[in-house]
Image: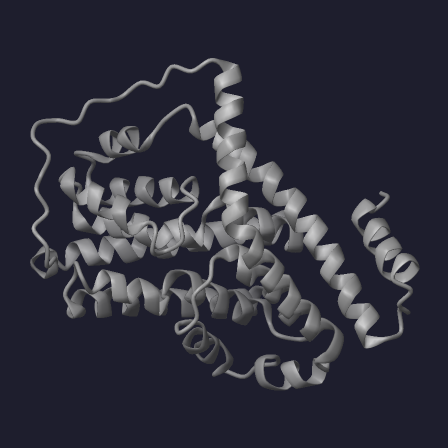
Length: 319
């Protein structure tokens, strides 16, 4: 099948800009243009599709559906709902508090908080575009498992006493709010939402692809493979520790993952790094510290971090 993205990026790099394929700069610029075009098209297409589906229910419907669910089924549903909410770890916190106001058990709310940054449609779109549907499906399955099991464990530990701010429960049962929109209204709302999300993340994409392009063109593959490839047992925990101080969403970090794996980093190690960046960021911990005791934050980070390590080692073992 003809690759239009490759054709366009090649035209721009080697004919219009006059760079050569053998040069480091030419290789880096070609990679940058190719990935930027491809990722932008994928993001717009998939975010619009998911946004359109989202017009058939809202946040209130999510809370209504989760209210009164048994813990484990609630953990599963909350983790799945995390897929259709394009939040980073920090922006998921207000909805996390809303779940607590709705008297949804704390373990279920944590399943959502874990899943939202790991499994949102932006991450899925970019994984699909860069690595194909098999790896994407495996990642989603493992990411959901971390969210479900992590939230379930937190729920069983009865840690409600470590919530520092008073969360006023909503009175009575929540009403299931029905959204009635015409097809034209749904399309318009979905397009506006897609444009808004795109405006917020396109600079992350450009920055991520730019860093990836530099590594792709100028950093020797042997350098990366020496420290993060092969059978080094410490590569996965090292990647997680390196990811925690950083803060980015999937749009910014995913292009870098593609380059690192192409240079010799094992896929599980690279994905563990990405998951740590998106789900265990220090900015998230700083915001959570205002509403949760440090002991609960430490337990949350410990459980999720352990899950990410398992995902990294499992990916490395089977791929």
